[in-house]
Length: 248
Image 1 (cartoon, rainbow, N blue to C red):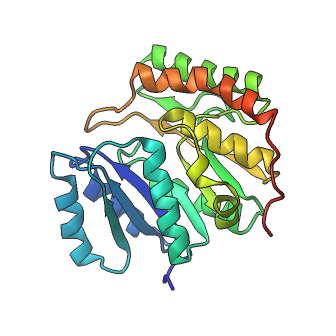
Image 2: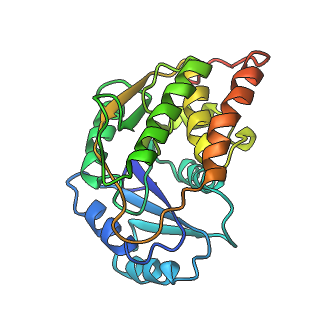
């Protein structure tokens, strides 16, 4: 059994500039979080840094090493399956580059642990536009993409592409993880949409998103295109799908 009820899953590819600092910052929090790195064979030596840190934190830091870049969605699916098999009650998605503030992890945890929600989303848009150091074009693209997703799917969520989340384990046990279709940012939309269709309680927690200072962004036009055009297929398929009752 784990000595924590909370697992933070962090996919990595070429994050040597950030990975040690993000891990140490999480481990300094008052609540005890465990961290699982899903490492996609970074050529910059990210895995070596994590292995060194595992010697210092053998009971809190874990890693799955994969053969290459297999997609953000598949990284999280691998992390979810590992976390569920180990008995964690709360599983988090988080970036390695400090665009998601580790200090917000306890707020997401509280929403699911104490306030009765099944999914807590770190939201950039629930209280305006809380984005720092993004080019205006990217801010507008992200903001209106979320508006578009809400219009197409009917999701009552302002930040539909947010990748900073906490799930209660029951959500991930109910969703058929092997049937999740999308790999990029559309993965984030699909997971929220599916949880919503199953009737899970979702809350948005306002956070400030800060663009990475170190390392290189993984965002590209094909990833964004999947998010924009994939939601139409997602909505269409949902019209012919029966969603099972959520597990208690």
